[in-house]
Length: 78
Image 1 (cartoon, rainbow, N blue to C red):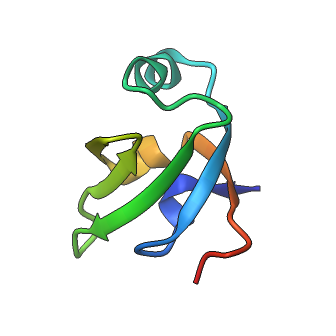
Image 2 (image 1 turned 90 degrees about the vertical axis):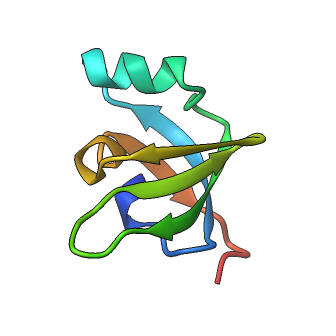
Protein backbone atom coordinates (compact mmCIF):
# COMPACT_ATOMS: atom_id res chain seq x y z
CA UNK A 1 0.00 0.00 0.00
CA UNK A 2 1.31 3.45 -0.89
CA UNK A 3 1.52 6.28 1.60
CA UNK A 4 1.09 10.00 0.96
CA UNK A 5 4.84 10.64 1.14
CA UNK A 6 5.29 8.52 -2.03
CA UNK A 7 2.95 10.59 -4.22
CA UNK A 8 4.72 12.41 -7.06
CA UNK A 9 4.26 16.18 -7.50
CA UNK A 10 0.91 17.06 -9.13
CA UNK A 11 -0.27 13.47 -8.69
CA UNK A 12 -3.63 12.72 -7.07
CA UNK A 13 -4.53 9.90 -4.76
CA UNK A 14 -7.49 8.73 -2.70
CA UNK A 15 -7.05 8.36 1.04
CA UNK A 16 -7.69 4.77 2.07
CA UNK A 17 -6.79 4.79 5.77
CA UNK A 18 -5.08 6.80 8.51
CA UNK A 19 -2.86 5.70 11.36
CA UNK A 20 -4.95 5.05 14.46
CA UNK A 21 -2.66 7.03 16.81
CA UNK A 22 -2.84 10.63 18.00
CA UNK A 23 -1.18 12.01 14.86
CA UNK A 24 -3.66 10.13 12.66
CA UNK A 25 -6.49 11.68 14.65
CA UNK A 26 -5.01 15.17 14.16
CA UNK A 27 -4.71 14.51 10.43
CA UNK A 28 -8.41 13.65 10.42
CA UNK A 29 -9.15 16.95 12.14
CA UNK A 30 -7.30 18.69 9.28
CA UNK A 31 -9.62 17.02 6.76
CA UNK A 32 -7.63 13.92 5.78
CA UNK A 33 -10.44 11.34 5.77
CA UNK A 34 -10.73 8.03 3.92
CA UNK A 35 -12.42 8.55 0.57
CA UNK A 36 -11.09 12.10 0.12
CA UNK A 37 -8.87 12.94 -2.82
CA UNK A 38 -5.53 14.66 -2.20
CA UNK A 39 -2.94 16.07 -4.57
CA UNK A 40 0.74 16.70 -3.84
CA UNK A 41 1.40 20.27 -4.95
CA UNK A 42 5.07 20.54 -4.01
CA UNK A 43 7.79 18.97 -1.97
CA UNK A 44 10.61 20.79 -0.23
CA UNK A 45 14.13 19.53 -0.90
CA UNK A 46 16.31 17.58 1.53
CA UNK A 47 13.42 15.80 3.26
CA UNK A 48 11.45 18.97 3.96
CA UNK A 49 7.66 19.26 4.20
CA UNK A 50 5.12 18.26 1.56
CA UNK A 51 2.27 20.56 0.46
CA UNK A 52 -1.01 18.76 -0.22
CA UNK A 53 -4.29 20.11 -1.54
CA UNK A 54 -7.38 18.60 0.01
CA UNK A 55 -10.68 20.15 -1.05
CA UNK A 56 -9.90 23.88 -1.32
CA UNK A 57 -7.22 23.86 1.36
CA UNK A 58 -3.44 23.53 1.14
CA UNK A 59 -1.82 21.74 4.08
CA UNK A 60 1.91 21.25 4.64
CA UNK A 61 2.88 18.02 6.40
CA UNK A 62 6.16 16.59 7.59
CA UNK A 63 7.17 13.49 5.69
CA UNK A 64 6.76 11.29 8.78
CA UNK A 65 3.17 12.58 9.12
CA UNK A 66 2.46 11.92 5.43
CA UNK A 67 3.69 8.33 5.96
CA UNK A 68 0.70 7.79 8.28
CA UNK A 69 -1.76 8.36 5.41
CA UNK A 70 -2.33 5.25 3.27
CA UNK A 71 -3.45 6.11 -0.25
CA UNK A 72 -4.55 4.56 -3.53
CA UNK A 73 -2.89 6.34 -6.44
CA UNK A 74 -5.22 7.62 -9.16
CA UNK A 75 -4.95 5.68 -12.41
CA UNK A 76 -5.00 8.94 -14.40
CA UNK A 77 -2.06 10.35 -12.43
CA UNK A 78 1.14 11.06 -14.32
